[in-house]
Image (cartoon, rainbow, N blue to C red; front, side):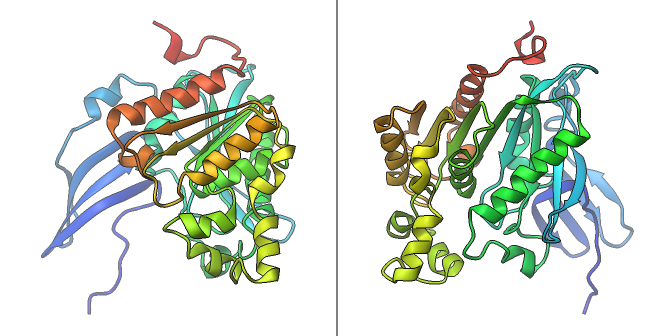
Length: 337
């Protein structure tokens, strides 16, 4: 029996790996480089980079590095979060800042997130700061923390997420409290809709691939088991139905005043498209500021492994939507020739 040993980690992420004898081949994501292949020797603990897929390209780019922080919520829950400065930040200026939220809900974020590398760096290059955290319900912090959102998808996790933004503003004077934006996909699409239905601090919001009405989600999405496992029952049970309604962002649609961009793929089997149409149609009926983008031939992985052209279109549409409402203290690096 070979004892467990830590080979590498901390501020990076391993996306894929394979082991043959005493050799480990792995794909590594770091803030400084989105993806390279390495060879690790278990015998002599040597580590060799095999590829240089991105180094030449990255060398000529402004790369923002996350700073890690922790804080404690009133109930004793410890929350880890990160802050990334806008590219070419100057002292004394205040910058618009995006609160980015992860899906799952049991996913977790950190410095080594390949799926968010381009999105984060693009937004930084457009002059936005970034704040992101792992709220209760996230994986990686033990079973109790992961189950901290049981029967509570909205209030508890949203409190952690918004508190991370509040803490970031205490730590960083460059964050413009009057120029805040929020975005996220899947469970985070749910969370974006929940937050803007309960909080009006954001200039604009983007909800992607989300769940907005939990009873419909149980019948529409292939992740429907999240309903009984996370809420303890079924929609035809009176108490569970009341809970599902109370935890559904659509219930609070009339309270949404933040300009909202809704994005979904028309072949999304994970969360389905009907709920996004319900949210959009409801906001239109209420004459609220909302736009809806539905991508053809795209499933739930649009932002991670979708068609490259549509992935780029998605990134730029979010930037364009936020730019309508953002005020920058100076031209962003991405806009300069």
